[in-house]
Image (cartoon, rainbow, N blue to C red; front, side, top):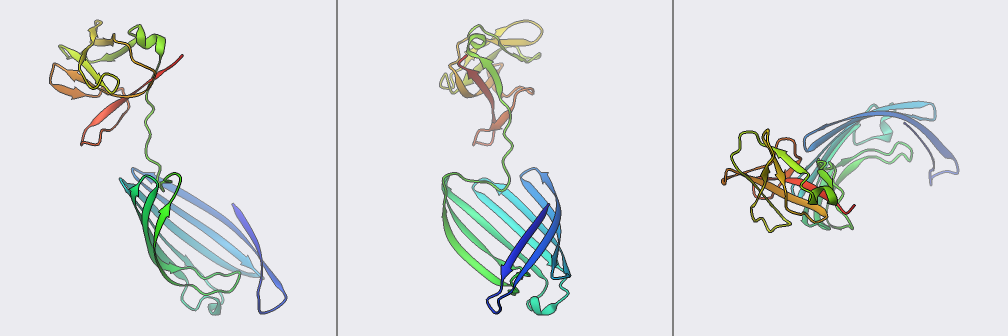
Length: 234
């Protein structure tokens, strides 16, 4: 990408302009995302090469972001605090829309306005319409069936070694409902399922709660997992 800016200094009547071509790459690994970027700021015939690294992590009710950067300054008087900066912030969500936020570190010098860098520390309370995570969680794609197919017993699961299989879900208050053996290790759901997004488990041989391997799963909040099933209205 590329950025451009024009600024006026309060000490004189002139303006200065800058052009900053930049490039970046990012890597996502589990709940963490790492971003590395570089840019070259051209200002009044001089160049400031710069590199930045950001690491973002989201776990449960806590979002953490750490950053750091370094810049080669041809004129030291524009950056008396040094040519590096670093900091971190953490947000602890006490509700889905409110969080306590603490941050601190050193911010970068402003080349365009000639403002030196400095240290900072903040403690705040954030209220938002929707939590925006620095690392979006993995959202599995659920099984999707039409209402007609679900009611006709078209939802099947493969469990070749099972002797009996029942299904429990949020639509039947987690009460085991037997599945019908359909041959070849396939077990078919025969009870009607209302339209909507549902969580479910299979009870194998009357004792094991499992999610089939070919079914997307999410954390059940109790150290286990549940499968996802969507039944559309049409």
